[in-house]
Amino acid sequence: MNTASKTQLHTLTIATRESRLALWQAHHVQSILAERGLDVRLLGMTTQGDQILDRSLSQVGGKGLFVKELEVALERGEADLAVHSLKDVPMDLPEGFHLGCVMEREDPRDAWVSSQYATLQDLPKGATVGTSSLRRTVLLRALRPDLNIEPLRGNLDTRLRKLDEGLYAGIVLAAAGLKRLGLHERIRHIFETSEMLPAAGQGALGIEIKSGRQDVQEVLNDLSHQTTWLAVAAERAVSRAMGGSCSMPLAAHATVQGEYLTLMAAWGDLQPGGPLIRAQMTSEVADLMAAEALGLSVAQKLIEAGAKVMKPA
Image (cartoon, rainbow, N blue to C red; front, side, top):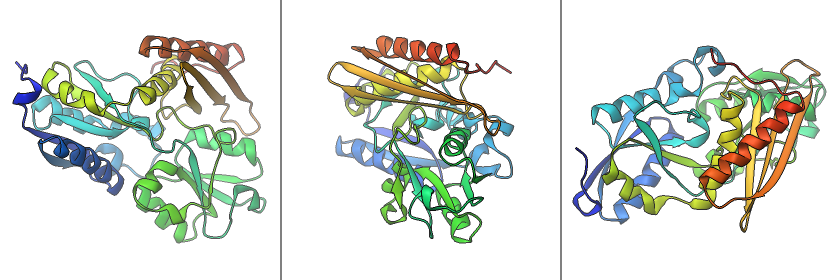
């Protein structure tokens, strides 16, 4: 039984992917925990999502491919926690696992990266833009239906290398990852959320643990950022209600002002020229249950306006 108290827990192992960004995130958590007197080591792992680069995530099993191996390490007791980019975490975790912590969010917005063009609007007609996201695809088409949107897989460094090789006129990446790795200079423009609505959880770090690890949970409580957690709970509730995964062109982003949370969501038809449906609601939100209820209400508005729910496979 894992019933050790916070004072009895002295060492921790973090399971992490081995990409540069994932390692930055794990080292970030490691340093915070070390400041609290814990001895923390990293267990680097390569996931299926890192290995399969010739097909889109929607074709090979979704974002869960980035977390399955880490969950195996938690299950076997080889690691105590796993650090994830929250937007890569499936909306429903397997039985026996849960989010123990959501940390304060970095910039949730998308960034325009290009060697030649300062903004998306500067691109000539027919220019090729790279993105790994169906969400970004439909939002880019809404902004510039004349562009050629092509898939772009790989970790952040791989995507930047493909851009530098001239395969794309520009690419769209999460601003948070670029900022965390000190690559601010690669950002030519940051899209406002009114232009490119972020993915659920974008910019936030989530820490997954095995259920029943109260000793680890007590350590993580101090790392949680309640405002961020309320926002991402609402966002993820939209996606969960829509059957959301990387196979769905869905965006959801929440902002908190005082006791009120404003949640915006968008769903797009992948067919060129298809509709882009938006919904927005503001509500007083005091806890995670209220945040999730708001997410369900916004999802219902999308559905009533014509958005399609993805049925389980």
